Image (cartoon, rainbow, N blue to C red; front, top):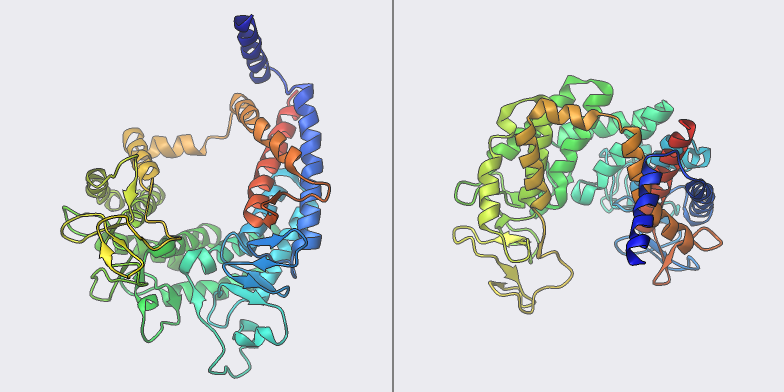
Length: 456
């Protein structure tokens, strides 16, 4: 009996993969379209503030947070805030043609344009309250004299300014609207101006007179995300300055690699290229989280430019990572310079070797490096040309069906968990990260199912 059931299940899967989309999948397609429409209508019409978003909301929207508590007039830039939600809308529009998604994406872009700072980028949040907004010196106010209390720091920390720039470029590519291009050009001038001669970027710009934010910064992917912005800009606009900026960024990664036997990277460096501490719980150290991200960026630059210099530093870095691995395929975030011992910081602000009384709410260890090591091995074994050829190949019908089959269970779960208003509630909260993830899956499923249907 059990054998018969197994055979039936296998036969069903084979039938799904090797035949046109089933009536059952057709039904899921219709439900997915309805679920996406409900979700977008609710999130755009009810949740958004002037087209922008925070991180999460209470069910009745009376309580709101970004990285900290927010008011009804505030939105967040840092992901999963406004650029991240806007990107999900835009992706859904490109996949499905949903006009409401495009409208919502443009509204998010408009909110970011409104909140662009005079320095060229974005702070963590934007406030639309007439009184509250006076705390910032915006680009649209640059004809007015700046007061000493007004904030004008463009933030590269946590993919802040970078996510806004990449989203605006994507919206401009789709719409061709010059108001977005104006904001992009202004932001790209900041990207070029804030890049040090050695190729690095700081955590914020203009440079503070003191503190770690003025140093060359890899922490929280700051420099890697800056390189991604300039690479996107070069691909879209072809300006030679942008690719030169990309290459200078890559050259800095090469120059800042620490010597063997600890051939990784630190979170930040001073102007003498020495690893330096940041916050009280972030000591100067070789970093098990930064190193794999730099490996991925170097691989990307190698693939984009074909220049071997970007891939040559990687074997020594991987050798250090392999020797520094903890149990359960994990790495420590910090390794002591010289001894290579994993180090942590306790609540007494002491650097220690044991994971006892450690400062909470921080990623002290994780499976940071596995994907970077696997990517390098794949690129190295296949070779650049073959890897690029394979990565650029469109999906075959068979691959589309397989992907659709893999998505179906998750999509059904998304539909079942959506309430009548189009919300996904978790722990009595509405999370932007859940909306982004669910919208991405629904729009991908709809796109694949429609494509397969059209080839019946």
